Amino acid sequence: MSEVTRSLLQRWGASFRRGADFDSWGQLVEAIDEYQILARHLQKEAQAQHNNSEFTEEQKKTIGKIATCLELRSAALQSTQSQEEFKLEDLKKLEPILKNILTYNKEFPFDVQPVPLRRILAPGEEENLEFEEDEEEGGAGAGSPDSFPARVPGTLLPRLPSEPGMTLLTIRIEKIGLKDAGQCIDPYITVSVKDLNGIDLTPVQDTPVASRKEDTYVHFNVDIELQKHVEKLTKGAAIFFEFKHYKPKKRFTSTKCFAFMEMDEIKPGSIVIELYKKPTDFKRKKLQLLTKKPLYLHLHQTLHKE
Image (cartoon, rainbow, N blue to C red):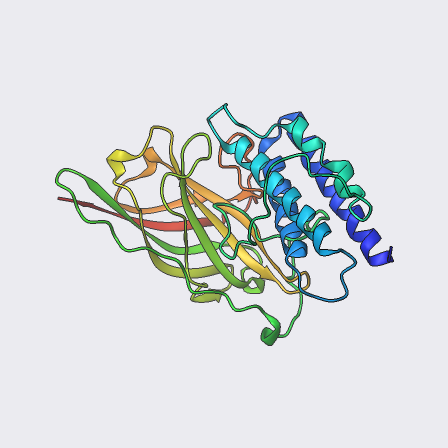
């Protein structure tokens, strides 16, 4: 086994244990994040075409199946249904398989198949392939713009058809205040609507990359059309805004911070909302402000009613 492969397996093992520990401690937001990061990394390796991989095609298939199980456990933690869940004790059976992947030759314990590496991220998921703790947010690091991966244009959706007596909401994302705004590369915002359990109520939308950066602000000036009539949103729902940017040193897109707006804040006009530290807590149980400085997400709301 090469040193590179040994180090890779150690990082996978450490990530697996972190996720399982978070899971057993009831820190579900952190567990889901860790599982999704590791699953994406395993999927990437399982589908890698390079010739210098030490993994056989059969081993890659097993790695892909482990990724599927991580996805299943992650989905179970986000689900309100109790039946047919993939349990933590099931997942723990996979740790020795992952650790000994180069010598494992038994039948895989679960009837699952590898899933394709997703190009569009799951709602709220960071495209984050690191396993170490993220460094303190500061300079984004130098890098040649030519080396940046191409960012697809935003995935904004058109306004829904109007219905008598029903209200539609347009949210203009004007700008976000950040102390290091000028150093954010290819920044964009992911917008989602979640219920109290963190389940999506509407399709997730990404803004295009920000229009400009100025002093301590990143400007967007883009309209988001809520994909559900306001009256049809469930009690306790919230609209989430995840600010993401590219890190050239580590070559991945990271969530820097997030904000959310609750239903009682839906009213015409301008609003500023507070920024919170990642990871995004869709259940709103462990919130920690990003900064004590007066830096916010600036929005403007327009209500449309027939």
